[in-house]
Image (tube, rainbow, N blue to C red; front, side):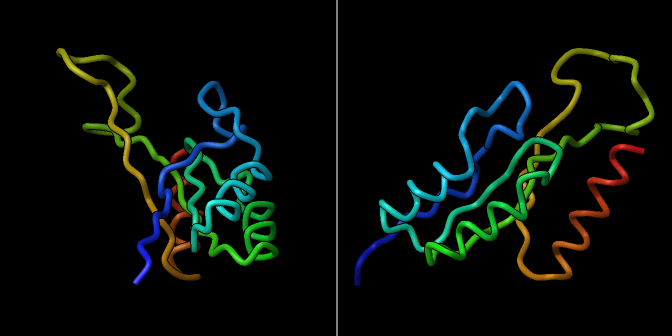
Length: 113
């Protein structure tokens, strides 16, 4: 049995100030390294999801859609910094199926309201 590796936390150039990787390069690297799948988890958005999905499918690489979201310790409406330590936390969310994609879209939308 051949072992394989799958990257589940990747930022593209859609992760403003955090990622410079083009989706084309991400998919090409996964394909060239014989990865069966690869995830795209940009910060707070899924702007590159359609392009990523199509390109990965064309190369025979399973696309895993996701997002790195920010979790507010109390309320997302509380903008005041309180106490010490991080003011927000990061959480990687990966989509398993169509319902998961719908849920992720709703969560991201609510985060901007």
